[in-house]
Amino acid sequence: GKPGYLRDERNTLVTLLQTIFCIHGLPQIMVSDNARIFKSKVFTKFCKDNGIQHKFTAPGHPQTNGIAERNIQTLKQKLSSSNLTLQRKVHEILLRYRSTPLANGKSPAEKKLFTNVYEVRNLNVRDRVQARWYQNNRSSWRLGIIIGKFGKLRYLVRVYGDNFTFKRHIDQLRYTRAYQNERIRKTVVETPPATCVRRSERLQQTFSNKFSN
Image (cartoon, rainbow, N blue to C red; front, side, top):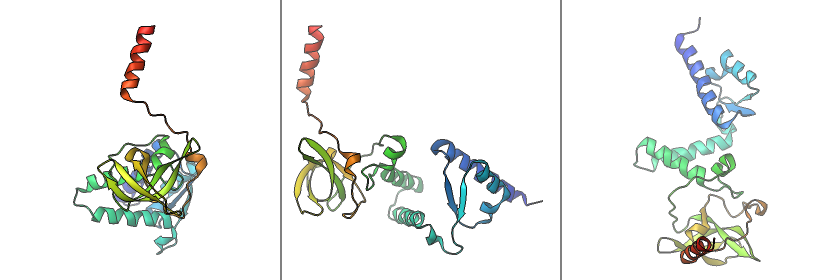
């Protein structure tokens, strides 16, 4: 028979994948390298039973799976640029990645969970951001870069393309990795601007409603 450690590895792989898939759902396609464990009968049967199309990268050429390889390189760079513990580094990297809007205006958390995750916000000069843009009683997101900072909450933003600048509160900004040539779909992010109500006015309205009933 096969060595015991090989059987254990295959069973562990299937168990880990089952844990991931029960949270995120089954993928249609799964890409892996050419490791022996991915060619086993156990793994092949697991993919077949779950309707997963399994593809291999070209031997000796991991760049075939370009997006995954770029993410791996980014992860390695982030891990080597901090003095925190490994677990803390991974947690902070995942939090930033999952809460950062993509080129379509939504973060990975919003796309998967239909809600964004909260993180402590701290923007710096030269950070790329999506900034709220108000026009014709509607709001959308404009891609720009922070060129100035006023205190902890207010920033000066320059819009990509037309060189226009304006001030925004941190609540009106989103950190992003998108560049100027990546478009933000207006159909996804356009919303009517929220109406600001002072706290004193809200309290006054609450008391008025309470005593009028």
